[in-house]
Length: 272
Image (cartoon, rainbow, N blue to C red; front, top):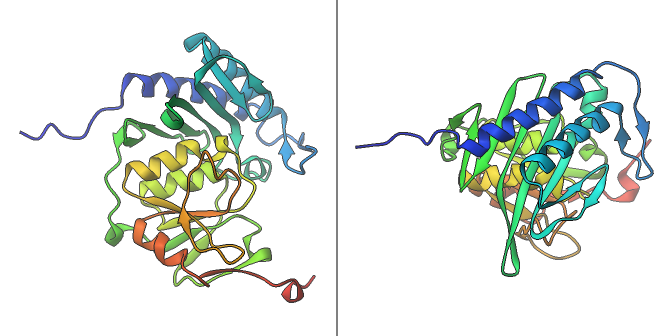
């Protein structure tokens, strides 16, 4: 007898509560004009710091021995074989612009031998009340198990970074959209809202850990984009940190990662 889709596991409920609390802390600052630039040029707001404080306190309460690596606070040392990667507000630009696809995302990583993997992780989008969780090779959306990707049911949509058009051309027959943060784009792809998402160079592991695990859980894949004469190759998110990649439905990813489909714009072709 078919047991049906698996329910959200206990750690999923715990993590959802932590993420929702962080999202509430961020929402307290939504619509307020406090953004400032960090040294790397990215945005920082009081919402980032408020959400981070909630997450760090909660993680240290529930998993006191684990290492934590957080975007704003940096490294909090702990056990070497288990670490959290924390982005308290992925999509800060979308947050400051009053959009919806932003929120806290975290993942617990464990080391087995020389390899690291996602133990579990999640994303919460406060304005949309959407929760994503991944654990044990299964993904969930708002408590319901995600089905494997079916190409026939996926809209011909490609999610792109906001400044993609300034640096690249893409040969894609379909719609291109930018909705917000990297984590949201990856989670939405796993849910079947788009065929794939392209992630620009410069990302950190806290941006992608949960989202890439969600895509893998539903049968998708991720490939590094071709560069400097090198063809596409499977993405290792722990060793290829910062490399441009495309992730999503396996065949669509293979097609879009092929030579010439995503091409840098030559310097002479960029105007204004």
